[in-house]
Length: 207
Image 1 (tube, rainbow, N blue to C red):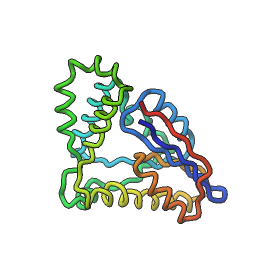
Image 2 (cartoon, one colour):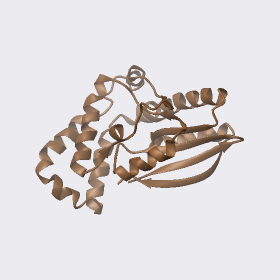
Image 3 (cartoon, rainbow, N blue to C red):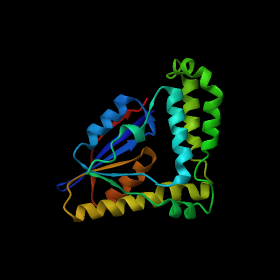
Image 4 (tube, rainbow, N blue to C red):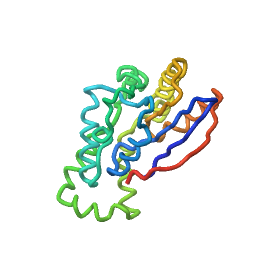
């Protein structure tokens, strides 16, 4: 599993788009922390008690795979960190009342496989096991297709771009965006329309 780091530039303003994965290795999160160091960082995060079960699902998944959780490895309390995301109420409305995620399926899977966890980790790099990992991650976004892209990707991207433009208007010239990797394509397209050009790209290995 790899995520992207895309460097965009317009005049003297530099925006670094950093794709993230909710679970990964210590090295992966150390690299992300290095990327955002001292940059004004806009990050994703929908705060709600309704999503606590989903957060627990990620922790259980990480434990099963011998990995770490993004929320525990990135210091969101730093003064340069700014949340730039939609509210849970707005997201819920955009999804027409559908469930935001099916965390129960992940928790059920982990509970039924704890005895085999250490053995499973030995197969982390094998194709079949990687397919299982990717399937589990996809379970966290089981939303009807007609609403999913708009609510989960486009609507939240628009919020992010709005916050980014506010930072630029206040003379910030070094800005990092910390969002799920699936968001980066749309964010990059929006920045190009605003006159930004891609000047560099690399990938980070989450696990």
